[in-house]
Amino acid sequence: MSPCVSQSLGIIHPIVLEKGLNAEAWDSSGKRYIDFVGGIGVLNLGHCHPAITAAAKNQIDKLMHSAFNAVPHRGYLDVAEALQSFIPVDYSLSCMLTNSGAEATENALKISRAATGRQAVIAFDGGFHGRTLAALNLNGKVSPYKVGLGTLPGPVYHLPFPSPDDGASTQEATQALDRLFEVEIPSEEVACIIVEPVQGEGGFRLLDHVFAKHLRKICGERGIVLIVDEIQSGFGRTGTRFAFTHLGIEPDLLLMGKSMASGLPLAAVAGRTNLMNVLPKGGLGGTYSGNAVACAAAKVVMEHMSDANLAQWKHTQESLLLETHERWKRSHRFPMLGAMTGIGSMRGIVFEDTLNATGAEHLATLLSAARHAGVLLMPSGRKRNVLRLLPPLTISPEHLSEGLSKIEQALETLQA
Image (tube, rainbow, N blue to C red):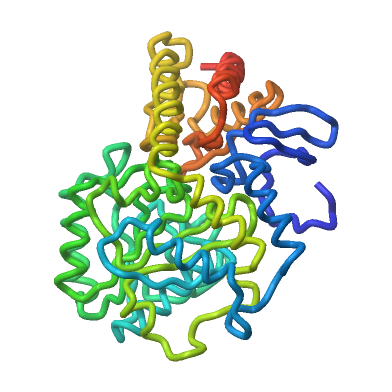
């Protein structure tokens, strides 16, 4: 990589992409790939979706930017109004648009503190909520995010993440929460609990639905704001608009980002109107937040993510991913291959330790072999031993099968 770029950026694939179309991407040498990275969950509708690029180009010719908190523009209002019907909650909500998921997280913390008059935050092992200072302290993993940074904004307390995929039990997590309130901090000092319904960086682990309902009950009873982080799991990735619907709960504040504008920088925090309006005028805002071109793209994204489309995309992907994984497991050719995690089209594959290598080492070898075979992949998990699969929801069955075949070809190169 160029010495002009900070060496502190972690690069997974040492190539340079030049162009993309839906699930296909080409690097500067002209090599073609099936893209299962999707900008780390940003391209749920694929590279250069024609309706989205057309909307962005049209907007560029009319108005590229106006700082909404100085002079409002129509695009911001259109997105805010569209979110009212796009987010499936039973209460009226308000929102603010931001540039990134981390910025949405930071603003949710501000809102929660102001609304409750409290400071403490509860987060979960394996969680990831951003790279800015306050968001960093929420992350349930030290290396590489918190190394060498000293004291981070807090106080923040972490609980085990209960999941049917690979985590603590609901009983263990419930006992840990009870202990926290008895030993570490009273619930009356906790401003908010932040949780991903499906962990992204944490290995595509689904939150246990019984514990999710327990959290919702505890937060309601004790005046704690429940923040649901759907920056990666939202906008159709799990087969519904947002993953919290799988758990039978509603958030007080919802964090969105990544695929919200299909490749243009846009994110949001939305929630109960009384919470969103608690800060004084000027307490929320940002120069580029809700950029006009990004808003034009987001409006089209929501139009395309109808319930019928999401159900169809989920069925196409989920069935083939599950069948392929089961076939690989049945063959007994890949002893390092573990369970499949997640839900819908948000799926991970755990790589286990064997006599010759750790799961993380197996996965690192696979990423390189798969790239040479023509498919781009990403790791996840606290030990970086979970392969995350993020093909576009709009990928054709032929390209999905091709990508999985290339992964199988790369698996053949791993040594047990």
